[in-house]
Image 1: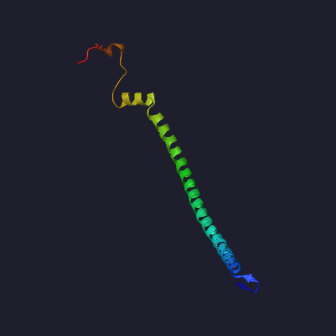
Image 2: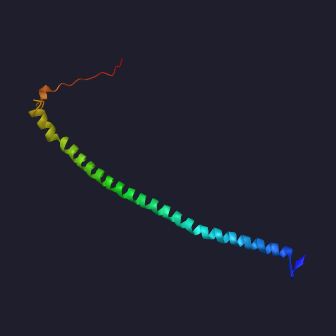
Image 3: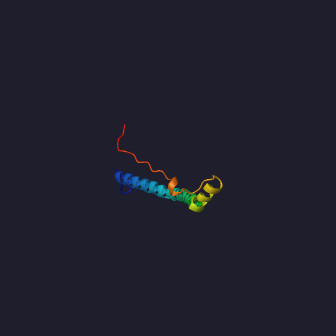
Length: 111
């Protein structure tokens, strides 16, 4: 059937094409705010992670300084001079003379 020189089939095809064009245009128009929302979410995540990294770096620096202090304390507390002074002054110990040293020899038998 023809209407003013157009076939019904051609008009239906044009309507379908117009419908799909309208749908694609709507999808495109809706995708812009969706992309902006995704960008905002990603920016928030990036900001949060950046803040966390800064906090962790500060914590790491504090722990490194504390570790250096502890290593220094260990070095100071385990020095031979300090141990000898405590042994002599506080514990009443003295350096062993050669005749005070007893050597014990073990045989190889085990029970």
